[in-house]
Every structure is written in C-alpha cells, then in structure tokens.
Length: 297
Figure 1 (cartoon, one colour):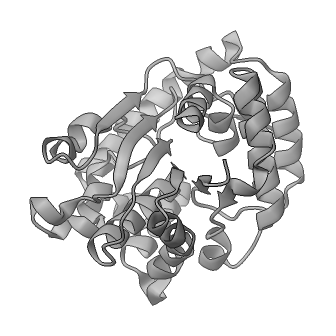
Figure 2 (figure 1 turned 120 degrees about the vertical axis):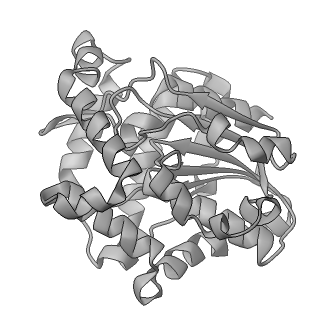
C-alpha cells in the first residue's frame, strides 16, 4: 500500500511541534479505525509513514503551543467509545444556537465584523490575513501542501486529502492552483471536516471565484466527502452539495457527500466540550468509515 497517502491539513491557531502533533493526530485517527475495521487498522498502523501532516501553522504564527493539555485530552478521548448524553445535550444547547445565528449575520453582512471585539474579530483578522495574502503568507502555506502533492499527482498515487477548518480552505485553493496553474495530472479524494467552505464570505474569497464557471473550481477532486459535527459553528453552512453543485454539473467531481446531522465531536479538555477540535473529528465513526472505505478502494 506504499502508493496510498493520507495528507492532513490542520486548522488555524498555533499547534504543537510538528512531529509531536502528527503523532497525536495519528493516535486519534488509529483509535477510531480500530473500532471499525481491524484489518484496515492493522494495514494503516504498518503504513504510518504514509500519514503526512502539513505543518503550516508555525509559518503563519511563528510559535508553537505546548502539547501537554492536548495529550491529556486525547488520552481521555480515546477511552470513550462515543458521545455521552451530556456531550449530545451540550452540542445542541442554546449558546451554540445563538452563536450560529450570530455568525450567519456576519456571513451575510461582513461589515458587522468592525463592530466586534475579542476572539471573533481576531479570528476574522486571521482569515483575512490569509485571503489578502499579506507578506505572501497564503502562497507560503499553500506551497507546503503543494510540495507534498506534486509527486503524488504526477505518479497518480491514491491520496486522501483531509482539510480541517481553515486547513480545508488552504487545501481547496492549493488544489485549484495545481489543476489550473500547474495543470498536473492525477486526482485526490477530498475529506473536509469542520469546514467553513460553505460560508458566503469564504466562497467569495477563494482563488477561483474571480474566474468564469469553467475555471472557477479545482478539476483534481475525485470524490468530496464533507463532515460536520452538531454544535460546530465554524462549519456554519455545512451542506456543500448545493454550494458546489456546478462542480457536479460540469463533471469535475464524481460526487459530493455531506454528513452533517447526528455527527458528534465529543472532544473535551479543561475548557469543556469543543465540537470543533480535529482530534474529536478524527476519532468519529463516520470519519473512520470514510477512511476505511478509501483505504480499501
């Protein structure tokens, strides 16, 4: 299985040192697979070297975070066999629903961001820094991914590209550049988790948006699977089959499958439930089944 690769593009915020972060993500991913398919689990364990992390965050933030709290939280996450009643209840609680409404207002009226303070405004500024390519930062982070993908696409290797949160935006834009600017052969299977690609603001700022329909979308995606957890406000508009239906009509992708109801990310740390964290997505049974299906293909 040496020609099969899983590439993971993480979301925003500083991350632990790359190798330590990769190992912890791998632990969550493998723990999920072990519950779904023993053979696929053993095969993947023997091919850990084919799990690639695109550690773009240090370039963007110029710092790493301490991994200790993540290790403790992932250790507890792996002990659980699924979401508890408390996890399910909290993921649909009123403050998540209020935040969803709040973010929808921002999505349709971006100027309202100027009225905000604190974490939300800081988050928007980070995304704008990427979209405006300040100091060439967007090109630099995409290049990290493209360096990994180029030989795989040329060799027509089997690639599962996983984009979490802002990482899904980076991955999508990189795929657009590889297909339209570099015109490389080969395709990838694209798995987006906790992705904001359904938001109007995000779609209007994607690289291909300024082009005509025929050149607007990447041409190197075989299948697109999108998974979003209940209570994940980053995945605000979580149905991509309608947002990107032109890709289907043009025959650019075989299918776009959305899993966005009854999906639970039960990651908890000292701050409580976090429906958006990547570790919680990677251990989720729907994500695991997607990876197993791709591995056996």
